[in-house]
Amino acid sequence: MFNSSLPLILTTDTAGILSCWSRLDCDSDLFVPSAMLRLEGPVRQDGVPVPWPLLTKCNRISAAIGPGLVFRGGRTTVENEVDDKSDVLTLEAMDAVKALVDCHPLKRFEQPAGSLATFAQELCAPFGVAVKVDATATIPQTEAARVSPTETIWAILEKIAKQTGSGCWIWCDALGVLHIESLKPYYATPPVAALICLPPGPQAAKNNLQKYRLRDDAGERYSHIVVLGNQARRARDGNAADGLTTQPAVEGLAVDPEMIGMGIYRPLVIEDNRAKSIQQAQNEAMRELAIRRVQGTKIECDVGGHFDDSGRPFATCTNVTVTIPDKGITGSWFVAGRRFFRDIERGDYTSLTLIMPGVL
Image (cartoon, rainbow, N blue to C red):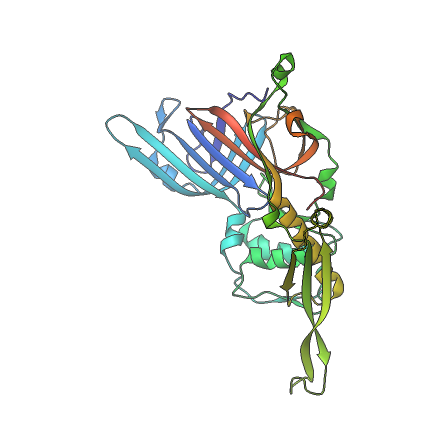
């Protein structure tokens, strides 16, 4: 199950289609802003040498395995290493969101409270990045959202996404589309694969987990998370210009019931000047609790091949069922990260990072 012998088809904007790759590393993760692709193979593709001058001018690329696109972005590095035994080509690329992570807006402007979609599209359009935003997501500040020249575009959008009442998460899919939306609809989708590790015996023929690691790290988690926000209040001793002084006035609290159930008291206090209301502080506290819970509890596993049960490449924001009776694990898990590999030693396999559905 999950066997894969299909080539990765790389389509470039200058050097045509390339498909003879002996090594593959393609990573996508909800906790890493930008996806990555690294390929290695002979310089002769289907018997024809890849023209180096054309490859150095390559910019836009896309990669597919079988019926599914797994990467779209821009080439960052190409290398051609030659010795008396080999002539090897290496290509590295990052998705389109990498520009948002690295770059700052060129113009300064303000966006009043309102549609987050309009704000995001205005920031991302110059980079050719399409945006998908929850229709209900709004900019929650009562004052205008300001674009700072010292902040990257990703940092600006992530900051606002954290404060939305709809609990938006920000990530990029394999098509290069930036998502700022709730993950709730994705939790409700049917499982795309069954991952199994049964005890030795006839039933073990169903096993497809090559290896796995279970992680439960209480050191990443807190029993109580308090977010202290700030709210401008008029006071006699305030600023001489406007009569306002900033005082801690809002507070959000999130409690981890599992930590409390284990008798662990471990509070964390975060001061966030961006939280201007109790709701914003509460949203931030809940988000911090979820992230730390995910970081502390996860399954990291390898499966053979690159495809799920439907015959499509594994993807983030999908669900799988996991059955490991020896460890008391059975049920649905959410794919937060997937990384495709191909090498001479192990062939084709996929590393998955699984988290509990509904946490983020």
